[in-house]
Image (cartoon, rainbow over all chains, first blue to last red; front, side, top):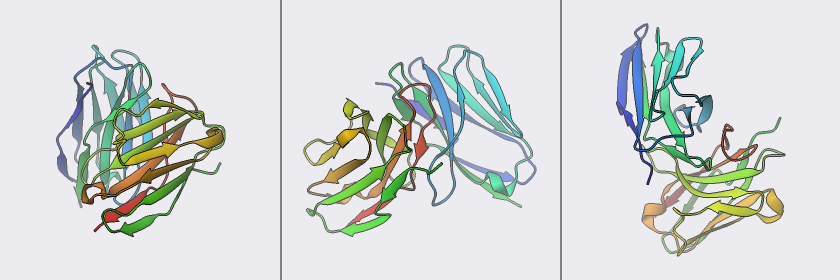
Length: 110
Length: 114
């Protein structure tokens, strides 16, 4: 079945630095979604990518969908303490079923 | 717009007991999902409803878990009997329709089985 893997599992970042988290699927995806979960909270939708090679930006966050629609990345520039949390990618199959990755837990040190 | 409501927020039970969770999705959302999230892992889909029909329940342990969505609105998830490994957060989510629509998650129910 479909598997979605994320790396790294943990990301320790100093405030102001950039980092990237990666998401890889074993199968071609219909679309990919990214969610953020703050400590003790629930996942909150960030963005959806549908087209091959698509790039979308949200302020300091840049999301990219691979050409083969099997991988994606999230790049955060100038990390802030508000970026703390776990970032999940979720790959959707043609039926809309989401397979979540294990997430990248981001810790920001001032 | 009201979000996805879930209750209870916390539940502690002993193994072999039964428990039920309730979810009220966002009004007008046709698709409802139940996820299990074990600490340190991503949400794992247990069951997906489209209106009041089941779309996917391939990862639902049917010998002990059951779910229903009567009248295509709110839903209940039941575990009977509970096992220690069922300790997790149970998240309900809804979306306008299945497929290319974002999912809105409720606050979750934290279940501890002792």
